[in-house]
Length: 371
Image (cartoon, rainbow, N blue to C red; front, side, top):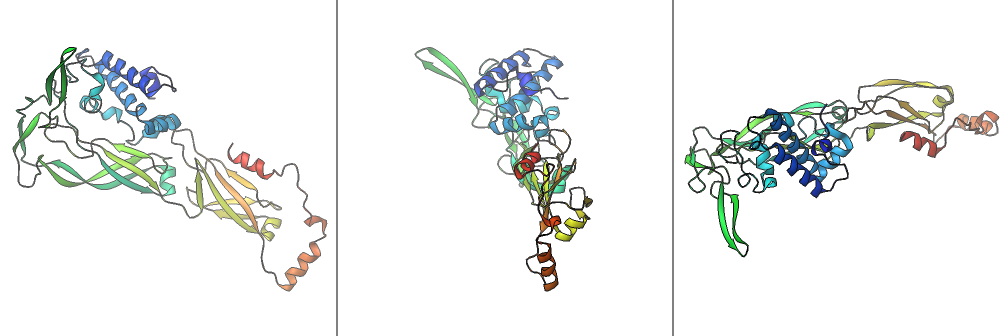
């Protein structure tokens, strides 16, 4: 089981953005690779802290995590903990460290000598899911056009920054000489420049290519949620790391089932004779057709709960229920014989309403739906 993000950073759920950032910086400095060379445990803790901060520093991701826990980012929806590397961390959060470690650079990973690898741009797509796919989870294969390094392109060390990806500026102030580091505007932080470029490559040595990407979408996702597939965005020039593929979820309405959280609702209409005599009906569910039995004398407004027939919970806590709302259909037109029958029944005691204590009121039924 993955460790709680708040626990990793040592903050409470009510911590402010500033407190979360401060806690992350403290952890990052403690486990920084320059401070713990060759320490695999420190590297792992460094990555955990970065993963926690990546989620908790983003208001939208934090809200999803608070509601669904780690399950909100299954299927590639989070930082991608197991697949992330030190370059990802420094490319996104290097500014957190300020000048504590050589102006924000790092060494000891990839032999960069302080060089920070640039990251390619992200790509965004929409994926439409029907209710069955949402209920059970699904693997989607999509074709993505992304920029990749062209065959035959070669690079050389940037002459402006000397391959560091950063340039240092010294400014005279009233407090004395101050040194600051900024991303090299010539190589964009990659530390490299184009040496030889094939005819099919752009100015950065990249070309368009189509790739089929597999996306594992967990059960229980909701409309508007965004998942992330690491390293499936555009490549970065030189030795940079690829961007990510951001997948926005769009849901397709079902013909007869309506979703409410993890529960599903189904409106079942029956005739007066079926309500009086009892019957069995076949209804839709996300697992296929199911047959239910209606007892004789069933009342309009009755709600039948089919437990576990709803949507699988995104946080892994079982499944919701399928709530069947029984509606007795009253005919609008009657022939002479039918009309005479109901006229005779107007004063028949069997047709007089006699609600029992077990027949719940409308407000009690609504309360049950949300319990």
